Length: 276
Length: 290
Image (cartoon, rainbow over all chains, first blue to last red; front, side):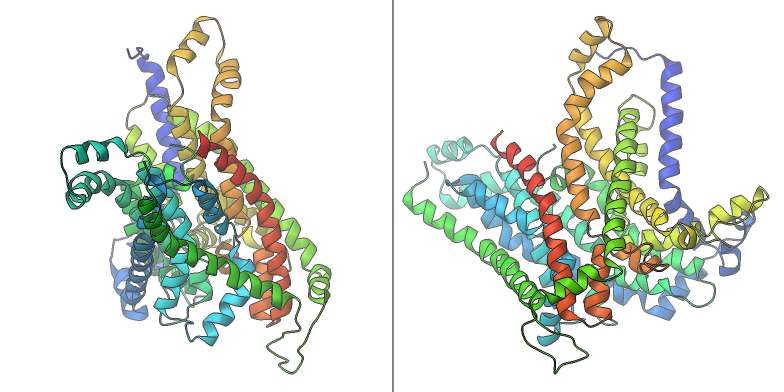
């Protein structure tokens, strides 16, 4: 029973909402435009800049000069690697807690969450020394390990909230119908669990991709992912607006697209199930 | 329905996650606390031994400590104020019917997915640069002059950058909470003659309380550890004008090589975060029973 909304009011809301949306999005739009201009035009006043010819020069230069794809690949390996390992550890745990809850399940979940509250700066010193002594500084494997650990609580929590919504009765029904354990898992549980696992995967890749404390402190030239690569533009030489824009666009585009696809699940994951 | 057998299996399935997190929690934490009571400076390897509370005394009496604590609080509160007020207003606006809802939602959400180093550098150079930045160009077009944001108002500028990244988070969560509001209750109130303001104060706001609490607490946890934005823009300066606690810990331990003092700062940061965490855990724990 939708109420009739006066067209005038809807038009007004539309104008206000689009204006706000575009203002918030403006910095991203702006670097997309700048990335297709020459360095000289990129620092010109906006109107001059907009009418200047378009070019993909900046993209080619970024790749030639800084080996952009190496860092891109590091980001992929680190974020996907840490997420997959995290899932492998978290799926059984969340599964057991959701379907065989014990007296201490709740405390266990809260304790896992509490490990997430430790500020990175608080353990910077020991982590740096451990990494140095074990030869893990500037290695992808070291970062995969750290990011797996810092995101593990979120993965467990998200999976747990999804798994908990799978009704246990459906398993009993399947068993009554004579399903074996194998077919129970394969045909009943897995199809119901896949959407939850997929959105956990997406959210965690986003978080790991954008993590900017450990990736900056524990890497140098070799294992640096895009967060650290972009940070190298903080003390540039010469004109660099177009190049910085191009590098930024390439760094955020994949995750922006993933994020837009997973926005519905984002709320649940980021609030540990407190808001759905 | 859980049998003895399935309990044992469950324990087995949970134990890897628990073991890893236990190690992750205990090893670095113990080391931080241990180092904070040791004389340990990478520049003077011969000076070792128990330091008592001296690392803490040095850290707390460092001329950068008081500004760092103040800046940490200003940063957290400033960003919270902008994102909460902006987030509620935006959520109310986006909850109204209008054309292109899906697309506007995506536009508003986008900054959240931008990595901190990109966001900070783009704001620093393309927008806040006093010569070639967007704001400077606009000012010049109106006969004014470019403002040196990061030189003159460094902390304020960083607050703007960080708020831009977190506004989508607050908006998205408040909007989600708003959409579960009972429309019929709203209409009943309207028919009883409640105006828009009293409907907001007496129906909408109470409904949003939990979402607001969760947003404030989660943001605070992250905002207490803002680091990358400062590293690539001001490096804590000019002077100590934009230095926060995590950044001071980094300076003391990595740049000054004073492991002991950095560790003492780390312990202080952990205590500060845990005070907030305590309240967050209570808010989330309540939900677990529901």
